[in-house]
Length: 486
Image 1 (spheres, rainbow, N blue to C red):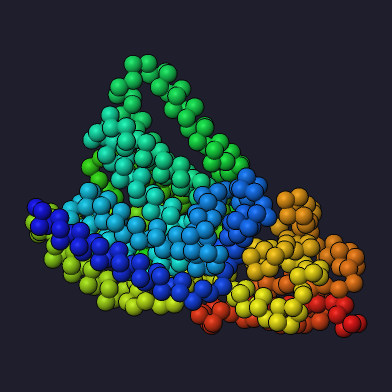
Image 2 (image 1 turned 60 degrees about the vertical axis):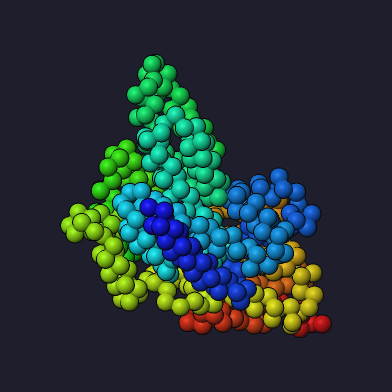
């Protein structure tokens, strides 16, 4: 037994090192931040530099407070850079290899655990998100941690440490991003029946559960989602079918079969309920169909793919080691969803074209600064301001968003977000000189403003794509007015 444990530890350690090196290679070039990465990272930088206090910074990022704290810590240790902001995701992903093994082994056997850890290590989608300064890899891993802890509740209900850890990790996931609140669901699904068995006063028990649920919902700001849950505004079902039926069809089918081999029925209910809630929100509530919101389900898919083959090998062949080995070799040799050698970039657009707008802001601002060294002192109009706040020392003069019915002023940033061409023209008339930064795709800035700018303002520069992904075209363009008079 000790020999098996030692060999298992060595093999999983090798998987962890491989995962770590693959992802580390993916952040080695310090390539451009994208909008979501730049937003939290710029607040973290400004907090460290004393431009804003931590309390104000936490309010700025709102639903991603833990991502802010993580970025601040990483900046303090490694310095302020894109690499430092992304490194925590690399660590979370590496931890995920271990958790995938432990959970799968518990729900099946040792060889199912090895298979899940191996797939987790080489899955391209995992590395695409563990090389970004975003919280979704952390939530994916924490979901697996909470499910593992929840599986222990029935076995050792009186162990307070299990409950404390489950609540701690689920709370951490909720602070990383609002979607992290789903990590409470498996825990509650197991906890509630166990408490009900022991509760003397059933009514008091129900009241406490309702109160606790309301508190968690309020902390996670679930109240803001209720209207959308009742009256969905979107339908991304076509993308759901594309992702889980066409792109990951075999993995999905076998993972679903693996889920139903769970003997703990309360845990089974918790996993199904949490996955269903997240999928419902992604299909009908979330304004975009970005895969990043589904990373917790991707982690579950990996685990239960391993659970399925681990259990199948045991039940049909009385030994699953060679079954899991053959499956691992087939996946590595034949799947287009895995990484076979490290790269300097892992695209998040491998499954959905255009899922992430990975424009090259870094080069864009570098060329802008080379052409106008003092451009930051002039008027700047933009769509989203995230990248501007990271690559410069300021916020835009104004932004423009086609989704809002009327202008909105942001006192914490000191600018107004306008909505149409008339407001753009009025604002532009106030300044003798300035720049307009255009995201030249279907973006926040109204098309009528883009068309006006292209026809009437001076073209300055255009960056089509990042050097690490030349085929993913997300053009950034710069226009100006008033400088010809100098």
